Every structure is written in C-alpha cells, then in structure tokens.
Amino acid sequence: MNILVLDDHPSIVEFIDIKLHELNNTLTIFKANTVEHALLLLGENEVDRVVCDLQIITGKNLVIPEYCKHQQIPYMVYSSYVNYTLIKVLKELKISCYVSKGSKTEHLIEGLMELLNNRV
Picture 1 (cartoon, rainbow, N blue to C red):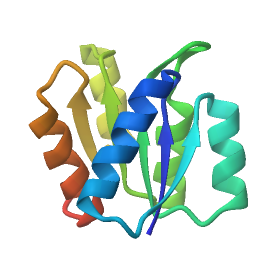
Picture 2 (picture 1 turned 180 degrees about the vertical axis):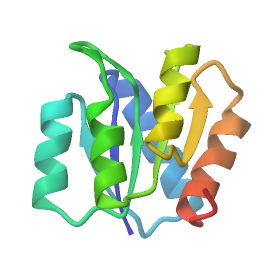
Picture 3 (picture 1 turned 90 degrees about the vertical axis):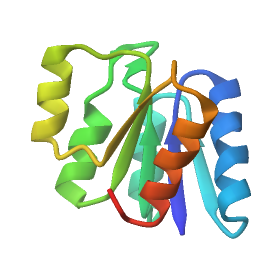
Picture 4 (picture 1 turned 135 degrees about the horizontal axis):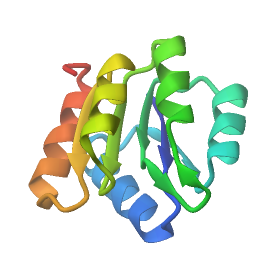
C-alpha cells in the first residue's frame, strides 16, 4: 500500500512515518512538505491513502482533501487547525478521518489503523 504524508513540519512527517511502519512495515510512504510537492507525488505515483495537515506554511490546505475526494482516495486529516466552517467543508469533501495534533498518540494510531484498514 502506498501512502502520502503531507505536513510542513519534518518531525511530524517522520513521526507519522514511524507510526505507520509500526502498524505495517510493508508500506511505501511518500513524504511532502508543500501542497505542490504533494500534488506532484500524487500525479507521479499510485497513492492508496493520504494523511495531511490543513495548516501549511502557505496557508490553509483544502487542495489535497478536494483532490482525494475527486480521486476517491481515503484520507485522514492530522491537524491542529479546525473551526466550524472548516468542519462543514471537510464533511462536504467526505473526510475519512480527522485527528487533532493535540490528541494523544493513541488517537493518532487509532486513526491510522482505521485509514489503513479502510474503515473510515
């Protein structure tokens, strides 16, 4: 299974990479720190799942959730940025899973497991 992880903080990307490989050591993980790089990786590779942040250096990221909806790729948002309007938009984009960066590591792992097992 191929997974794209998008976050503008390298330590978060590495942390998610470690947790994903703990759950399944056969995964191929593509890493991006900008929306543009994520779109490039999505265009060049067959990606089965996406984990993305919503607050990227360049501003709010709804491009990747929109892309995932149109391509029918299950995705999980892992972000500290949330408000009522954003939740409404994410519901319209058929968000697969949302985990707050303020959550415990166990909640991140639960979200990743749901995403990997297509139970989202």
